Image (tube, rainbow, N blue to C red):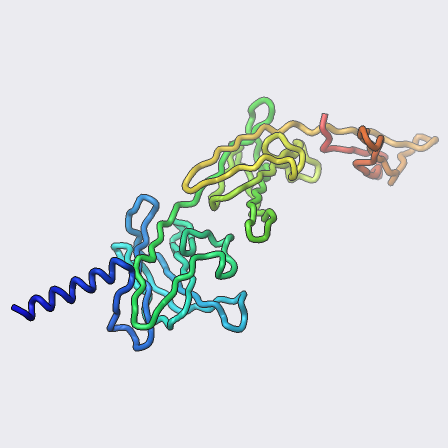
Length: 294
């Protein structure tokens, strides 16, 4: 009877240690520890086959991380990274199927990860399992919309550039360009963060004027969009047709004046007339200055 009581006492002690996050793990290699936790989605549903990677900072290069261990979550979302030397680790959670966003512990996105001060480091103690190192992964957010002309007709093959604010570098990073389809639609899966959008006709002689969201003519005056987790931000835009100036240049004999510079000036309040566009007449004397605002 006394043996049963001791057994119950031992189990109780183990349970208490588990609750405070530290559990002895006798089966692991001597002198090493482990990390244990659960991976779920934002709704708390367990996620299977999420890759969990532990990395340790290189002692000779504080910008290099070395892989120390890797494992996968099981059908209940649980994982154990064992046999880790006593040290501080950063953990990443990756869905190889790309259904969910990669993140670092604790709830840090990859673009915001650099040194150990940008993530929550996990300390491993020899012969101890550090528990409750959990992660809740989110689906990508979406930026989508439709681009039309003033008559509400869809515009095909309009380029959409997305810029995301980089908190570490304190600047804006351009993402891969998108293009509208025949219905004028565009769509991109994105990370949560701050964004600015640029819409333009990529042709050499654009039929439509460029625009930054919303109705801005430059990046600096563009309106920011804040994207949070698992949302769809709808950004519809109407692009205005580009105006043009055309003509033909001839000499006194009426023959085409070839290769003559044509400079367009624009009046600005503080400085007066300034050159904004320059082109040359072609072999027939014709010239065209396009992509102008009406």
